[in-house]
Length: 210
Image 1 (cartoon, rainbow, N blue to C red):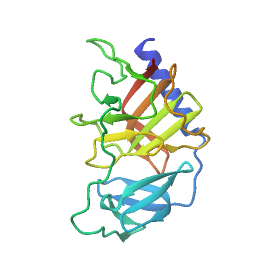
Image 2 (tube, rainbow, N blue to C red):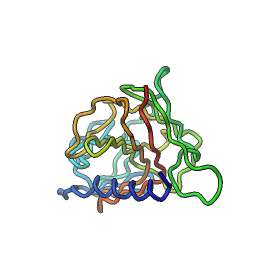
Image 3 (cartoon, rainbow, N blue to C red):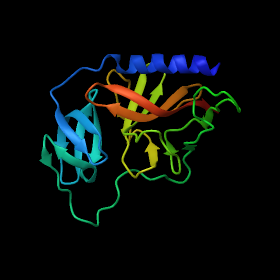
Image 4 (cartoon, helix red, strand yellow):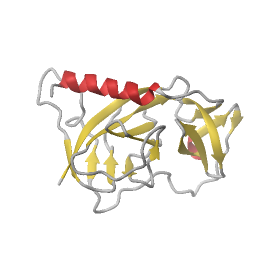
């Protein structure tokens, strides 16, 4: 498949992914990264805030939040552990790099696919990779039936992808694990919660094999 065909398929997939997003009454959440999010706040604790996105919850640490509807957020004092999942030994690892970035190239070798064994979880490691724009979301899509998201946290570059960390998006089937023969798309980028536009800074294709 050519790079142009891959890109066309990717844009079609993203169009299907966000076509059915409905608007809800939302609060304005300002993150310390400078991003502004329009989202429905489902729950707020002393350490985290849970925001509804496409009928699925995304969780942000209060350390990342500047204000909610103009009310300044003061997180707990120093000493809290950094938010975000850590890599675990034995899980397959997807290393975010240029070689696997699915984009058109005028020269050099074509982008590579990742190949993973059948598994219930894997790790995304973006340590050392420089994004064009600061991301705030990871999308994991398997065909048209399985669509999930993980909130990207500033300063965190390693994420475990599993049933415990994935939020199922609207109309997605429950997470069944990653099975042989599946084609998985991973997108890391910036979601505008107000317009529901998603701009991937990096995306790749993954084959699940025996």
